[in-house]
Length: 178
Image (cartoon, rainbow, N blue to C red; front, side, top):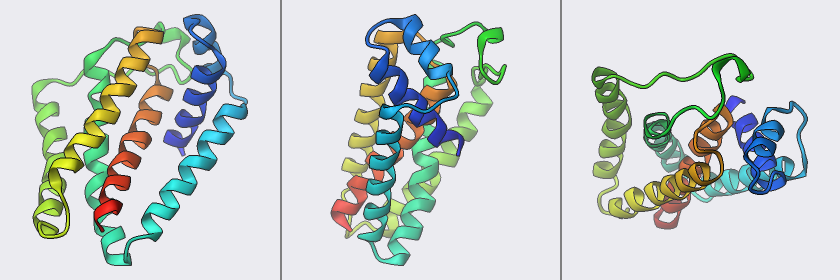
């Protein structure tokens, strides 16, 4: 539930912190969940559930198997695009994600794109693969701009939230066709 915790922290921080960077970071670091976090989790879980429920069990299974690594690949780029927002000693779990080297980037790309390509090939007559590229990437871009404009760097909560929201954008897009 690390990503879900990140989603709640992200919405609490960005919802309650306004445009004040220090306030956003303080709220996101607080271990208590707030109203924005609860609402975000409820809406996320409802959309996630009903999106998968709208598909046949086979389509739901292969959609999750393909779009989860694809979304994680897209969202993982956040650590390559900006610096960590806090000093390492200020991080909640004392972890700052390191930038990927070329080899790690290639493996991340393969892990995300291979299942995605197989999924698009398997459902080539049922799904518009271009939209499966556009909407998750657009979601990633909007979230990147939001995080950059408010924090000038990412946090673990940002990473978790971006993973779930990019994945949800992919699932909603796929469910439109399936």
